[in-house]
Image 1 (cartoon, rainbow, N blue to C red):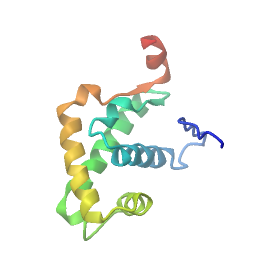
Image 2 (spheres, one colour; image 1 turned 90 degrees about the vertical axis):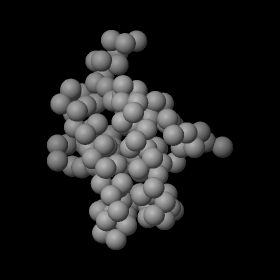
Image 3 (cartoon, rainbow, N blue to C red; image 1 turned 180 degrees about the horizontal axis):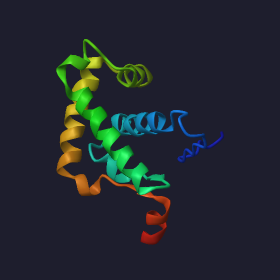
Length: 123
């Protein structure tokens, strides 16, 4: 049996959809986890502080959008993709999003996305 790596590395040019993919993968990990504090155990690294801010903002923005009632009737592409990949009903994904958003906001200091340099410095 072959072990599946716990790490995913993306190498793509600017404008290729890396941020969309990273945000979707990050959210998928959160939704799949049995722990409501899974974000404390996800290591997400990027190159610049600007990219760190953008990633965190997009994750929070997606959770906000997923938490709105209208998402069930008018889902965006990421919501549809995640519901399909996770085999979860839109209503359940909506409710999980509300819970995760509240937990992350109340534990924002533990919601860590870092630059590679920042991570190495902490080591």
